[in-house]
Length: 425
Image 1 (cartoon, rainbow, N blue to C red):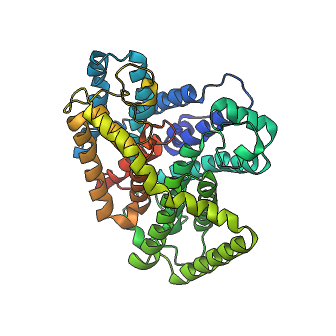
Image 2: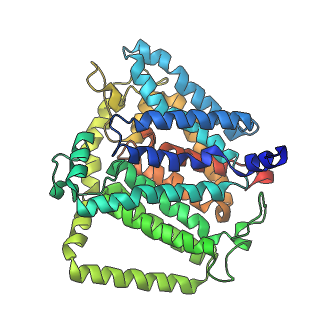
Image 3: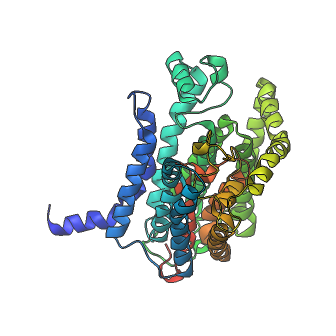
């Protein structure tokens, strides 16, 4: 292969686009390979992604959001100083660093995604199918080997079919799966207004690239992906995920059909009819399913009130209000350490307690800059705005931004919204 061919391949394919596919395969391999450590595998992949970004000169300080991203990453890294001063072992910091700080490399992946975002979202959705389809089969059939595996992994409390049928865990756990699938709905929505022949680096506004000429292959792919991700999110049966999935449906429909007029309104009525028919059929055949999910949703306020005492206790016992406790001090890895106030559920409060006023402000201002840019060009960044909103929403009652599997898609969306206008994808 000559040098020109290698250069073309280098320009066309990016390793970090495959990240979620490779991670999904890594998690699936745990069913067959005893001792497989998918978290370690994902960490190695992130280091490779960081190396590729360095080779492609993807790390940049050109814009204000870039500088705040680097400052926040540096702050989290330096927090090991006061974490150790607070009596925590280095292992707590290391475990939390690879789960919530290292995935910030995907901010720069999103920031460098001009002309490549379609590939990223396509590969992300393929990964969701790799997790969702086998997960649905295991959920429905509940083979004993999977029940035993789930019990050993800590996903279920009893290795039997009845317990497996409570919620779908696939191979990553229902909490992670819930967020990933809701984000997958928005990744699918990304394709609803993207023409099949979008040019690399095109600056054409998205509302002029609406597929008003018919049903394109990209749109069919997006619709099917959204539907499957919605189904998998429901089967995961997480309260925050159920609410988020419903809000995403409303958000996408109102935005694309009514606010931005990016899709013909006749498709909205077709969608509404299909959903109504499906709901009616389920009510007739298995009304207990409807009640099961309804009771989960209405219990959400109670769950938040139960956790609020834990949040207040953690805030009142911070090592330093300004500096925070240090990365990992309020995470699960700190369980059993004397003086630790672990926040089992509540990612936003956890982030505040670990980073303090200074670190939390850096993080918050970066998000404000990204969301402001995304909202000003919502026709282009509606998917990314939704992913960030869902990540924040589900982080109220879950440690979503501390899950190594969930954080990359969140930071990629933030980075995408921070692309300067002259190089927008």
